[in-house]
Image 1 (cartoon, rainbow, N blue to C red):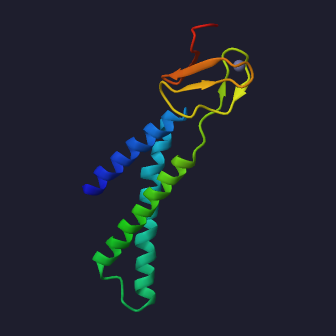
Image 2 (cartoon, protein in one colour):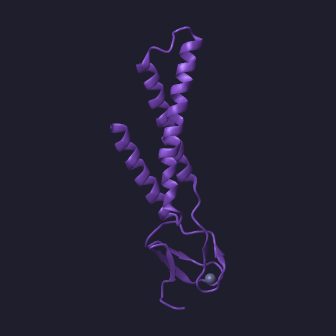
Image 3 (cartoon, helix red, strand yellow):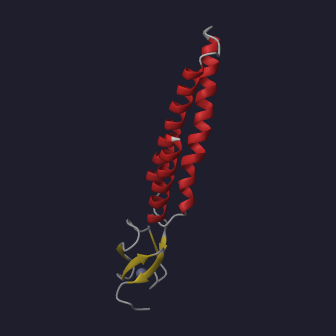
Length: 133
Ligand SMILES: [Zn+2]
């Protein structure tokens, strides 16, 4: 139960961060996907390790612990991936030059190095700051 709450909040956090970079909020899905995948892998790895070391697979608490540890690793991986995600490239609404991407999300301001126009993002839309064409 606690795991589900953490996973949901991680999903929402990563979705928001991806969206702020002009990327799809579906990047937040990396959290549950990697968490659950690594959780299964962690549980399997611990089970295999227990059997290979002659302890048998009866200690379910240890296996569960391995699963949780794997899930946390998966969550951290998802976090790192979204942090390293570069902002989406933006096309200057004034001169159509491609600009490397906005540094911040909603309300973020940037300047086109090609024509010097100031613009901002609002709700994923890029517009001239002075209201020009
Ligand atoms: Zn421009």
